[in-house]
Picture 1: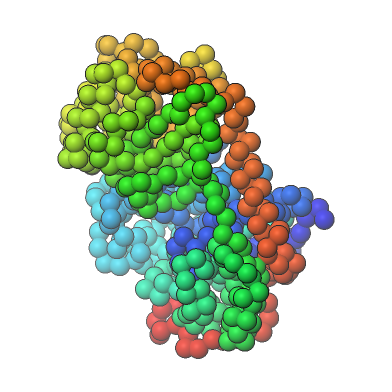
Picture 2: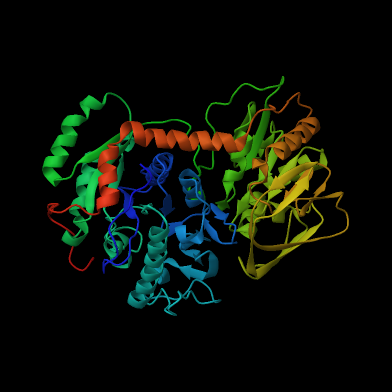
Length: 546
C-alpha cells in the first residue's frame, strides 16, 4: 500500500488526502500519543502523512527551518510522520504568560498578548497594550464572531493545504470537545471537524477511571450536528485483561451506536515531548524512565529548578537519556546540596522566575554553588537570569531588574522575538539548536570564553540555544566537564545517540497502534470520511452552545 486518498474537494475538482481528528474526553487523555502513533504507523506503511493541531496552548515550542514557532508536540508528531515540521501544522499557538493571558503566535510569528476573555470572544480588552492580534482578514479575535471566523478560516486553509500535499492528515484536538462553555468559539475540536468534514475518534484515559461515563457524556453533550462526526472511541492506558473490558465496550456501542477501535495498554517511559510546562509538578518530578547503570564508577545528579512558566523543559531529556544520569525537578535550596549540575531552564516569565528563585532561597544557593566552582547551566530564560541585569519593558514591563550576577551579561527585552535554528561549535564538537526569545544578551567584560552565542565564567555556563544537548558529541563533552568540576568518576557512555532513542520511542508509539488498534477501521475513517447514519445520543448540547 503506497498511500491513501480521501474524497475530492467540495466541487469534486481537486483530490485531497484523507483526514481524521483525534479528540479526548479530557486534557492529557493521550491525544498527542495517539496522533503520533497513527502518524508513525502510516509512515511505516508508505503513506505520506502529516500531523495538524489547529490551536495549541503550550510553553514547549520548536522552531521550524523557515523560522516559524510551533508546538513542540507537533514537531514530535512530524518526526513520527517522517516529514519536516511546518507552521501549517500548528497555525495558532498560545503561550501562557500568566493564569489569564497568553502570547498569541499566528502562523509561526507572535502577534500580540491577549487575555483569555478577549481571545475566547467575550467582552474585555487585551491583557496589555501592544500589537493587536490580527488574523489575515484583519479581524481581531476578541470580536467574538468575526475574529473566530477569521481564525477558523486560517486554520482550515492550513489543513486543506496539508491535505492537498499529503495522503492523510491526522489532526489532534485540544482539551475536550464537550467544553460547552467554549463551543461557540471552537476552532480545534468539533468546530474544525465540521468545517473540514472530519471523522472524530475520541480517546479516553481508563487509568483515571470512569472511561465509559466519559465517552458517553462527551458524546451526549454535543449537538446533533457535532455528534454526526463522532465515529468511534479509543481506550488508552489500560492495565489488565482486555476480555474483562469487552462487555462494557459492547454496552457502550449499544448505547451510542459507535464502536471502540482500540484498547491501548499502559506503556511506561514513552518519553514523548509534553505540551504544557505548567503541568510539571514542582516536587519530585522525574521525566526519565528507570536510570540505566552508569558507564563509569559514579552517577551524575542533575537538579532542574522548576521555575514558574517553565518552557522547553524538554532540553533536559537528552541528559536523562544518558546512562547513570539522574534528573529531577526541584523547588527548595536543600535539594541542590547533592546536585552535580544545576540547570536553570527556559521560562516565559524571566523576571517572575527571578523573584521566585529569591523568595525560595534558591538564588542564594545557586550563588554559593558558583562561588565554590560547582557547575550551573542556564538555558534561554535561565541564561538571562544569570546575568547582571535585565531591562524588560516587553514581557513583564518591570523595567530594570538585577539578575543573579553570575555572568557578565546585560539583557534587554526586544519587541521582536528571535526565532532561529543556529549551528555552531562548542567544546570542540558540532552543535545544533534552536532559539526562541525576546531577550537580547549583551556580553560585558569578564567572560572567560564564548559558549553557543552565550558565555562561560568558571563553572557557570549560559546560552540561548535550546536543544543543544541533543547533539551527542557536545553532550558527552559537557558532561565530562561537569563530572570533572564535581569530582565524580562519571564517564558518558560512548554509544548513546539521542536521535536514535527518539526514533525508538516513536516506533513504540506506532507499535501501540499497529498491535492494539483496529487499523482497518482507522483506515476506513481516514479514507472514507464521516460514516453515514450515526445515531443521536440524547440529551445533546444545551441551546446556544453550537
